[in-house]
Length: 424
Image 1 (cartoon, rainbow, N blue to C red):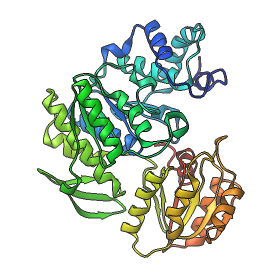
Image 2: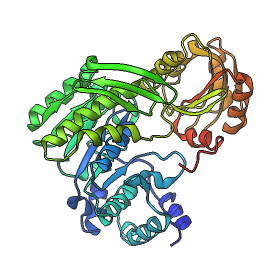
Image 3: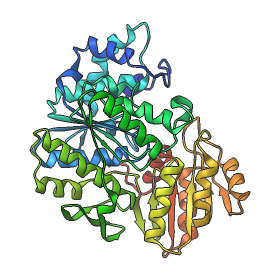
Image 4: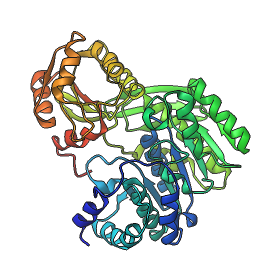
């Protein structure tokens, strides 16, 4: 099987798009010898910030000398981004070989696995093959019935910032979504929760009490922001002073605080993580399409924010870096998102919009999005493609301006490709 054949198989229309439940993943992993039972994990759920939190933790653990796996979704430019070991993506040939090995087992299942379940099983096999000491595992959707939740008690269960998303699958209320995320909390485990959402926090606290898990949350009041700019920012948190992250979004300081609390949990559980490893790991973190600066003249930023909670954080970062500056936005959204709330957060910051349709069947047409923006009193021009929207935004802003592409992770890869960053 070639790499191209492997991807074609993985993305085959034979798989059901989304079907919550653990039975199929357990069956497939059972046929593979239960590789997940021979690995240790940090399990991360939540609505926003999961990937950034995972990337920081993986970078720290690597600098601490551990062979570290990282499992995330979705990918930005290349499928192989979804499973990495010590910062290196799975090689094409290895992905093809593992897919060929798994194919007969998946094909023989009466209840076929979904694409995400198939990828999760493939990743578990890869991380075991690579003899990972620990795997930073990002949940796909929810937690309790997400295929990543086949694992036993992790070294730490981390719940990132909570917001309303995937309401069709998880439920319409915050308590419903929190209950789904709380599914990663295991009996006697250690839990680090971002906190700050009273309804969700109540669910997490109750679940920890019921399951005998220890819960801790960061105190964001202890964050002391330092110098910041397009290259990143410095900050202090509690006993940690003058830390550096190369991530420009203001919200990343909160994610970093969650990471530092998780490091404390791991140390209590016997993981040898030096102060130097923490500092070096944070400073070396790279996470594309999360308030990522792609150009300076004009400034062009791409951010994967795609729900009101995430967009609000992006808007706050733009206002922090460019106070009083009007922004040109390249925007594309999924039609099933809370588009009205998303637009309400960014229209006040906008000079104008160039609307695009991301490559996804759920995406809203550029013309419809432009019409909805125009109805709010802002200037909006529909574009033929993402590349067209990027080019128009750059031309409109000139060397001293600021442009930002946001609204969907699915278009972030196309945006980055316009700046020849697709090799990352």
